Amino acid sequence: MDKTDPDYVPLDFAAARQRMVDAQIRPAQVSNPDVIAAMRALPRELAVPDALRAFAYADQNLPLGEGRYLTEPRVTGRMLQVAEAVRGQRVLVVGAGTGYLAALLSTMGEALEVFALESERRLADIGRALCFTWAPDVHWRDGALVHGAPDDGPYDLVMIDGAVREVPPAVLGQLAQDGRVIAPVCAGDGVTSVSRIVRTAQGSAVQPLFDVAVPLLPELEPAPAFVF
Image (cartoon, helix red, strand yellow):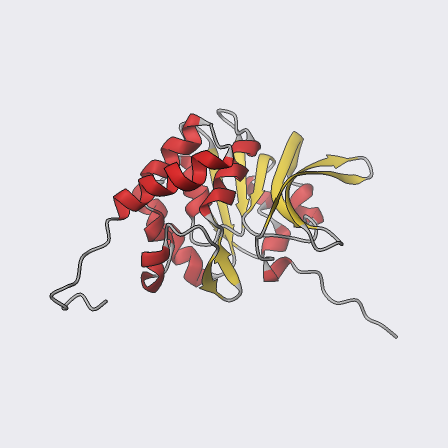
C-alpha cells in the first residue's frame, strides 16, 4: 500500500516478531532460551530487501534474487537448536546471505566468535547493515562459498544457510577436532534433511535430524557430469 494513502497503517514488526516466535518457533520444538530470546529481539525485516519487508515474518522461504532465499524462521530456529553452540566456540556461516543466521548466533548470549561468508555482494551489503547495528561482532568475509574461509579456521561449528548435495571438502577440512557442520542436505532420493556432519577417516558421516523444504544453494550445486 502506498504510504501516502490516508488508509495506510504501518506494519507492527515488533508484534509480528513475537507472533513468529509464539506461533512458529516454539511449536517447532525450539526450547533453547538463547535461541528464543535472539529471535524475539532481532529485526528480521532488516534481513530482506525493502519490497519484501511485509513478508519478513511469514512461515516461508523468502526469495532474495540470484536463486537465493532467506530460510523460513521455523527451520532457522531448529537449526540453531540442534547446533548446540557452546560458549567461546568459533562459528562459520557459509552462504550467510543477508546476515540473519549469523546475527542470531552472535546475539544468542553464548559469546561465540562468528564469521559470515558470502559471495553475493548485494546480499552481503544487506547483512553488513543488519549486523552493524544489531550484531557488530560478526566478521564478514567475501569469497566463493565452496572454499570456506580457511584463514579464520579451524571452526568448532559450521552452519550452511541453504541446502547442499554435500558439504564441500574444503569446508569439512576447516573443522576443528570434534567440530561439526549443521546443514540442510538434499540426498539422492530428493529428500532434504537438516543434518549433522562430522569428519571421519573416510571423509564424512552424515546424521539426518529432521526433514525440511529448503532450496539448494546454486553456487554449491555440483557441476553436471560429462556424459559420452
